Image (cartoon, rainbow, N blue to C red; front, top):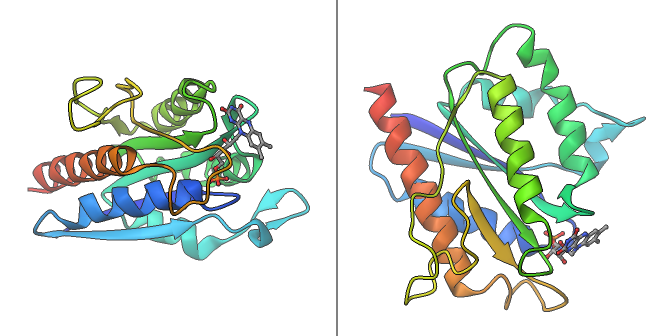
Length: 190
Ligand SMILES: Cc1cc2nc3c(=O)[nH]c(=O)nc-3n(C[C@H](O)[C@H](O)[C@H](O)COP(=O)(O)O)c2cc1C
């Protein structure tokens, strides 16, 4: 059994929809347990993320998929607070050799989402993790990877309700990413 955790921040629910799709994809792989974990703003006390139970859950995972809404051209501050708290794990190389990947949602088709994925990649590299990209051709006829990203999964949602955006194509893209990460986690575990 391999465990894949999806840790994400969403301010108004759009990234939650993509996170759920990624989780669905990971859980679809036999022999894989998928944990969906949200970053709760109430866990940030005086600017510091403090939820040891969440960090322990990630310690016990074979793969960690990072997710955040893109705010002002990067991950949301709440995600960064979590990332800064993960420095406690960096000191002991606790996440070394775990698989990593990432996803994000922003309002504009580009919206500088790549900066967010790039930050997730840097975070993973600092921890000595192994990055898995999307591995899908861009703008497929069914809408998969319609935004043309390779480093991870991207979704787009502006003012629509989260029930409408990110759209089905973006959610399918997220599902594919979750499944791919889970398959690699299982391979590595074996
Ligand atoms: C503080 C803030 C900053 C934002 N910055 C960007 C941005 O840099 N690029 C962009 O395309 N959209 C930006 N947006 C729009 C959000 O990325 C978009 O609405 C997204 O769907 C929000 O996801 P969430 O509902 O998971 O929080 C911003 C929204 C907020 C509230």
